[in-house]
Every structure is written in structure tokens, then in C-alpha cells.
Image (cartoon, rainbow, N blue to C red):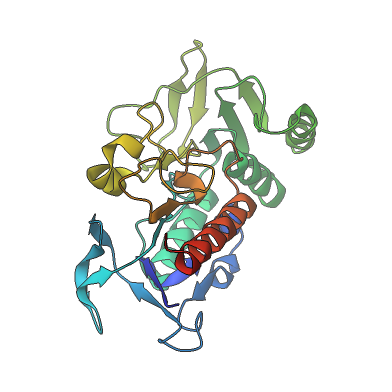
Length: 291
């Protein structure tokens, strides 16, 4: 079998450490792994740097010509694993090269170093780590974390919330739960002027830097054009069968996995890995038994 991976980035992004790399100079250089040695030979597989612009039942169309393929990659089986968009710096979707991604992390380092009162919006994994990283390495800076829920890490046991709150308290992070920041039309302007940001609960937070650490947006639009019925209209995730085939009998050769899949699994790298393995096993079964 030959495996073709279509990936817009030149390097794998180790995004789990992006919050730390936004704070500690030097970390940004260690988080990007080139794709050029993933396969032993092109006959076994290949990672091509391009953006998929359209999917048909037989092929994927690309935004650029790739040697050996042109602008079309044919397939017999497809795994739709486009993931989800997150606000920067939790994810650097729009930076296709290592140099561009590193530059963006350096810009975040400069912003954090320059600011004195920092507002973090969203208490998920990125917001929690960023809050503590800033306070640990820049204890002179004030950090406020606003989270819309009444606890952190809602998908996990309550004990994780308690531990997270304990660590935030230890590092003197101001915590505001069950409230939402009112984000201005067009977003915040990074001019480092001290402003008062209102919340829906009636609070005002004085700050000169605002960082969004809010939730994800599934990247399901491409598949929605081919199979509208496979998209959950309430969350834009891709509906699946237990086999991880998409929930559309017209396309039994298309599977999905990762953050874009509408599954009960918590959206983690480990879960995506296991889902990918399941896709692989089921595709191999279909190849061995095409009926």
C-alpha cells in the first residue's frame, strides 16, 4: 500500500509546548520536526506540502502543482483528519513554514515581555499553562484568567479542576470563572495601551495585552461540500460510524479521525492516535476483503 499525506505545513508542529515557547526564549526552535524522513521511500509513502481545495469520490484537488502528482491526488481510501482551528498562540494554522511559525512565537515572547497586565481569555489547556508560565517567569506581571465555565477541564474528573485552581492560586493568577469577556468587533488591538475590558458579568479588567485561548473550530468545510449529511449541524464535526467511516453510505471509503471527528473521546493527541490506528486497521480489512 502507498500512503500519501497532504499537509500544508513544512514541519510537524509540536503545539503542546507552544504556550511555554511564547514565554521562554529559545524554546521556539525545538518544536518543529520536518516531514522529509517520515517514509523510507516514495514507493511506500510521501508527505506533500499543499492545501486540499476540493474532494471528490476519487481524488483530492490541490492549491498548487506537486512533482509527481500535479494538482490532483487520486485515492482509493481517504482519512479526513483536518483537525480544528484554535486561536494563536495555541495553534499556528496559518504559518506554513518553520521560519514563519518561529517568528510568530518570537513575536508573542516580545508582546508578553512588553506587557505589564495580561488578560487570558479561556481556561482550557492553553490558557491554564500560559497563565502559570507567565507568572513563573515574569512574577512582576499581573495575569487575569477568565473562563466561561464554573470549573476548568470540564471533560475530566473534578480533581483536575481542583489541582489546576490550586496551581493558579499558588502563582497568584487572578481567576474569574462563570463569566465571559466582551470581545470588541474586529478583536483587540495590540498597541499595549492600558484599557478596561468589560465582561458579561459586569466586571472590568484593566490590561494592556489580551490573548485569546478559547475553543476550537472544526475544519470540516471541505468535506461538507462532498457530503453535507455527514456534518453535524450543531457543532460542525464529522459524524462517524463505529468503524470511523463517515456517516454517509455513499462514501464507504472515506474515514475520519482526530479533532474534526464527532466522537465522545476527549480531543487529545492520544485519542487522535488511537483513532488513526482504528482507521488503518479497518482500511486494511477493506483492502483484503473488498466485498
